Structure formats: C-alpha cells, structure tokens
Length: 362
Image 1 (cartoon, rainbow, N blue to C red):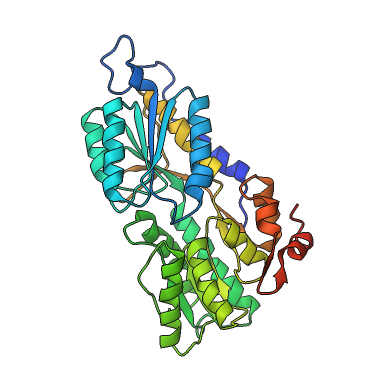
Image 2 (tube, helix red, strand yellow):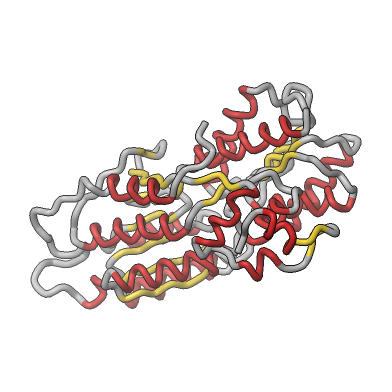
C-alpha cells in the first residue's frame, strides 16, 4: 500500500473527475426559467455541522470555501449549525428564503436530507460535502474507504514497531458517530486491512465524534479487559486524543494509535510518540473540488464522477495522505497547522520544540 500520496495528485484527480463537464453551451442556472438570471442564482449556501467533532470546520473549511467560492464569482452564505439539528433546519430555511443557486451541506445527524428535499423541490442542486446523505445530487469527499485502509495500516505498522503479533494483539476499535455516513466507510476500510492481518478487536465501544466521550468509552473498555492494550483504531485525531489521555494517565507507552484530520493535537501526539500516524486530508483540495463542481452545476452542466455511493449518488473522491512524524513538516508547510501551535510546550515531559527540531518542522 502506498503510504504517502501527493496533494498534487489529489488535485489532478479532482480535475479529471470533472473533465466530463459539457463545455459546448452555458444553459441558464438551475432554478432559472431562462433570460436574465435571478440574483440568487449566483449565491452559494453552505451549512457546516459543528465545531466539536473536528476543528477543521471553522479553522479550514470555512476559510477555503469562502475564499474559493468568492473567487469563482459566488455570493457566499456560510453558517454553522453548532451541533443542533433544529438550528440546521432554521439556517437552511433562512438561506432558501433569501435564495440559493446551489447548496453545499455537511450533514449533521441526518438533518441535511430534509434540507436537500426542500432545495431540490425548488430546482436547487445540492452537494453533499464531506459527509454523505440521502437526496444529494453529488457527493464530494476524500476517498473514505482509503482513509480507513490507511488508518488500519497505521495500527499494523505500530504493532510491528512494538514487536506485537496482530493475531494475538489486544486492539480496540474507537469508531465515529454512526449517524455520519462516512463512519461506516472508515470502519470498512480499516477492517479490510486489519482483519486480513488477523486482528480481532477485544472491544468496540459505541462510535462518537467527541474526544471526552471517546476517553470515557476507552477507559471503561480498557478496565473491562484488564488494562491490556496493544493498539487502538481511532477513527480521527479527536477520538485518538481522548484515548491517548487514558494511555498517559496509565503510563502505557508504545501503543499503536491511528487517527485522521492532521489536527494540531494529532500532530503533537505524533511528534511525541503517543500516536503512530494520522491521515491528512488537505481541506483546500477537497474545497477546490467542491467549488469546481458547484460552478459547473450553476452553469447547468452535468459533471461526471468515477465512483458512486451505494445509493447511486455520483461520488467525487479526493486522495488522502498518511502522515507520520517525518511528514508533520509538510502539513505545517501547507499552512494547515502553525509552528507556534504544534511546537510549543510539552507532552508528558517531552519537549515539542525539541521534537520539531528533530523532524524539521519550521
């Protein structure tokens, strides 16, 4: 398996997937009856899910989508539901009343499906951004099964480094919230790799996207299994950080721990040896693929994609990248984390400044 894939390749893949767009004519925008386009035809309405499941939504997605959509000529309305399905629906109703040429929705606990139905009844194309849901015209995300495979490989690599046999290792599965359609794809990919190597999980607590809950769930599972642990498949860095707090409290070192998102805590945990690796998903690349798609849909074009979800939704899948300690510098260089945030302070007595110097983070 390739353990490091280039951002350039991801950009190229996204561009190729949209190469099927017609360029022979420019029909009236969706929802228009022809003639002069209504003002709302150039308005992109975006709903983000929360700020708790991952810092990416406010720190990166908002910024890249806002900048990119405006550069593409859209008027932009980006709002965050803050983990509240009722607020999600209220935001959507307000946006639809004001007018949208295209809607880009990150689902939260199924709220996006109802919004999509309302939008489509008005002739507004709907993009499922990052998380799938029923009723979207297109789904744009990273290749989520591949993300899971990279996470599974992370656990195997960590076990190998520790000299542990996957067939007898005590491995825990700390998955994501099952209401998030991506969570099942992450687990599918991870299982495919880990269980092919003989891993049988000793515990699989309820999935969450919450570091504190992940910490509690893992603490309980670890206690129930006599404190024995060799590896943890953690579905993202937030969950991994909750797990790592338990490992630190019990001074359990050398445990293989996966993650994804390359958030600041994940990068710090990787540099100090508490987390084996993370799956880096350059948000800017995903945002650019979604913006290109939104632009094509607004022109009335029908982009093509080389993947489909089980329900037939066209799936534009962007390529992720595996990041261990030697590649943390690449995430910082790309602007998705700062030296000050990553390299300050210490973790369990290990200086981040020293580790950043060791691994060339600057």
